[in-house]
Amino acid sequence: MDWLGSSDYVFAREVLQRGVAAVYLIAFISAIDQFPALLGERGLLPVTRFLRFSYARRQPTIFRWRYSDRLLIGICTGGGVVAAALVAGLPQLTAPWLTTVLFLLIWGAYLSIVNVGQTFYGFGWESLLCEAGFTVAWLGSATTSVPWTAIFLTRWLVFRLEFGAGMIKMRGGREWRDLTALYYHHETQPMPGPFSRQAHLLPKWFHRFEVLGNHFAQLVVPFFLFAPQPVASIAAAIVILTQLWLIVTGNFAWLNWITVILAASAISDPVVHAVIPAWPAHGTDAGMPIWYAVPVLAASVLLVYLSWWPARNLLARNQLMNASFNRWHLVNAYGAFGTVTKTRFEIVIEGTDDPAGGSWKEYEFHGKPGDPARVPRWFAPYHLRLDWLMWFLALGAPGDWFDVLLARLLAADRRVLRLLRIDPFAGRAPAAVRARVYRYRFATRAEKRATGLVWIREDRGLYAPARRARVR
Image 1 (cartoon, rainbow, N blue to C red):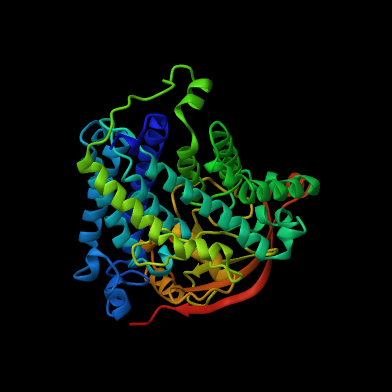
Image 2: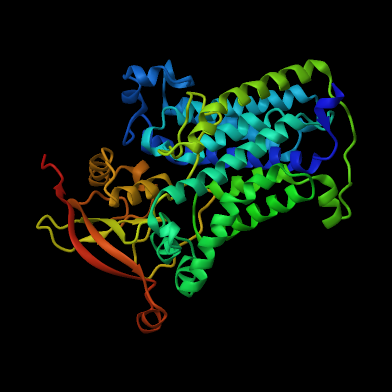
């Protein structure tokens, strides 16, 4: 079945396979670091309790039969080793079935985690990673040509990712239509980065230009991903450049990083050769054995069939954002920031070792704002799940895990404390904990010069009253 293969997308295959595998490696490391404290046997939302519900037991997950923290770490370790091998490109040097099987293994392992991850794994980029892993599994290896169906379906994924986000914005808040959304976004986004303040302080005319550029990149450019070359490669370059700006000015876990990787599906070898002459203009036309072509075609037909629901969603008036239409997280609907928060509130957790309730000290998170003098750090593509949920909590989202978090801090739970940047009690149990709400905004240039502060904050009162340790 030589007609199924192409010799013009070897570069795209290298980027897609190694890049997606690298994101899986980060995701498995993140799970080892955070899952036991958040969702483990003694987590804030224990998987063992979740699996008592019939809905949970119907999900495709290894843990439906048994969960333990040791099993979770074992699966993540094994998945990380496989992902690292794919990043190194070792399986890709052998028969194509091995590369496919290994990608399906890490997809299945991570799918098992996502399907029991509850609210801590309820982000669109979790489904995106699952879909990306399954799709690039069918790109073959160095011993075969690149299946054009897998390349096309990866572009279809990028199209849904970008166009879906653009349509959500147009159907969402007025700020996207009147071009004012970026007056607020850099300051109020879930987890600002080190350059977010500088971006926020840019002139308003520049922010309006940013919104126009975003609309062009998300509503017009995606259609050209399917155009002949070199137009498709130019469209991919525009997508990549806009994602790099988001990487510089924010901290959206691996969302922007994997979008850059997936956009490479539209870049052909002749275009790469024109920019980097050392890269061959065409790959070797190795052909494709029928024993591999048949499952590639079967998987492609499955993905095309599953595309009906997200395609219809793109045209729906009540468009769903970040929705999965099947339990396998394949061919999903995507989108982000249909509305932009205009005021930033932060929940600050405090503790005291004074039984009388004096001298409150703040717990500090790694990513979310706390100390007004601290410049935000870069963490993406690593995902700080607790920090993100604290942002949603301040917006009024339900947080059945938050009371448990306070109880764990009151007990000086070591696993939970490891999720924080600063424990003001150095591992000792406090006498009481509480939470307050603050209004945060970036300091102006004049305020920064006068005070040295990055953030100006205003106390808005108590969020959770003091919880005290039980007297034994």
